[in-house]
Length: 484
Ligand SMILES: C[S@@+](CC[C@H](N)C(=O)[O-])C[C@H]1O[C@@H](n2cnc3c(N)ncnc32)[C@H](O)[C@@H]1O
Image 1 (tube, protein in one colour):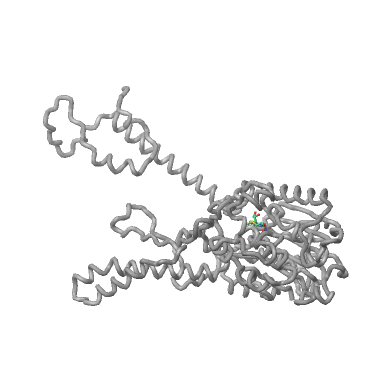
Image 2 (cartoon, rainbow, N blue to C red; image 1 turned 90 degrees about the vertical axis):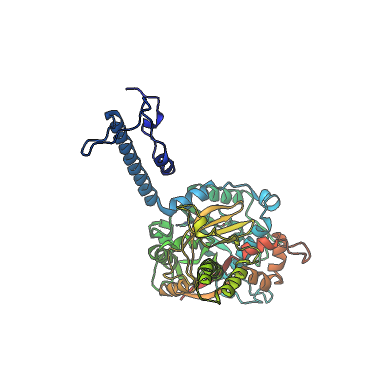
């Protein structure tokens, strides 16, 4: 029998629609006659067609639930790697001119690049990287051998020019990244550097006035360096892959810029990453990089949890006040003060009190940022700001023009440092970006470099990084370990 009542057709499962449906008036019989009481034991007078329609709808819901579960299982299998890879593949390469002039975060880009150049300048030379080496003619421009550099998570090859300007000449640069399109772009960038005859803005090596050094041999491979061993790449084996502390062959440098946080999804990945780093390094080789600052993350998480605790007290205060606890009012006042947190960047909007929240609405979680960046934890965070166990603390990170809500993982610094020791990696250097700026900005090489890179105006001019950009920069630390 055909029916005009669309509701009888199989409908997609929609939980929200189910609720009002329950409250719907029963349809009246055509005769408008008062309903007769059903006799006990008699099947309700539901027409067979309606029973069939209910059954049909139920089956449809079950089918859809099964399909949704299957999709979730596929997504879970795809895992974070694909999400991250697809994100970086999709970030457009907008060219140096755009990055230098039109980008809203050009100051941040310049500062980040300058910090990366700084650690390359300070820690890549093989032997004498002590302050003053350059002034005393002990710089490495004519060092005995050319550096072998492995750049894990090389992305679009943004650091190729920095390596070309390293104080000690680079002989081989190997770039690895799981994002295939990024690897193509890195290769293109390398080729165009070759067409321009190498060159760059000059670093501690001071190539200004001299012909730029011959462009290094550059090789690029698509590789997940946290899920797989890199030993299966021929050039890695040719240079030398050896986990033992005795290994004399291997790369001089493994660099991992803004990338290692993806490895802290679980212990297996973090260990695989360190195994790859240590296996590829020669004894005495350096492991350098930049990662988010877990101390900052910990502080923010503590602030957030304190606010939540104060709010919970405020909410329970009226109940207490009705009883005999005279101090409850004072408590509530203190909590209200705590709620009016004036930290400019922390999220201060109060979560709706539980009773105002829609059913199923998620509880408030730690979140902060400014107009340029945002960090958002999807779940609970430790009240003391210490991330235990040190793996799997996921947050979503957004950075204007650069990163669209991509999942990252906290790298708890002390745990990472201890783990690195298991792989014969000994800490040499660990500094926040703002501190690196303060301590190196007047260096007679790195200072002028900061001007050429647009971090500040010419002639020791003003800092061209806005306070909002500096806050993002301070979300990061740079580090260097030695393989011992
Ligand atoms: C923020 S980008 C940094 C790119 C480059 N190092 C730079 O500083 O310009 C992070 C890079 O890490 C890479 N990455 C993510 N997971 C990785 C993995 N499992 N192995 C190697 N690289 C990975 C991404 O594909 C992306 O290119």
